[in-house]
Image 1 (cartoon, rainbow, N blue to C red):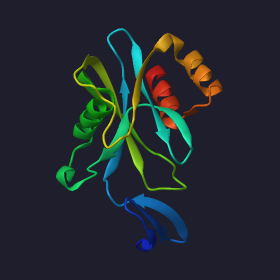
Image 2 (cartoon, helix red, strand yellow):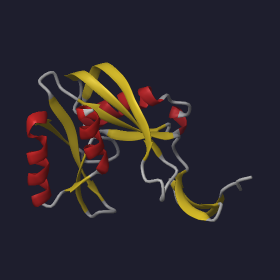
Image 3 (cartoon, rainbow, N blue to C red):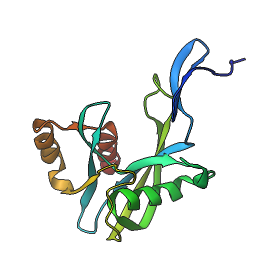
Length: 173
């Protein structure tokens, strides 16, 4: 019978735990993660650029966020969180939503899984930019130019989140 996880250390949002001889990280403030592959009417992918302290630089990402990450959102559905995160981070709402896949984010490091959604028929409804000083910069890139654009940004010193590459693969599938 598998043992229950025991906490080694706790922070505000993360716990470092041990279970069955394995040490890993778990979130103490959320029930999941959503990631949104958002496409405009003219086939542009909505990306964000955000400074990420663990990497010490700007990172190219798709809109994403935590599910149920505060007391007011306890029991929040994944789709509800995806809609909220798309609006908060980018200022867009979507006419159509499709659930794509749920997968582990880094199975050797965390128990966190990411639920990917595809959002289409976008309308700019708000400013975006995130919450609590996230400083998110929204970028729209034509799908036909996405790989070249990513390489340009890498040469400029930006990092690329793995969810971007996952999104591109899911779009091509």
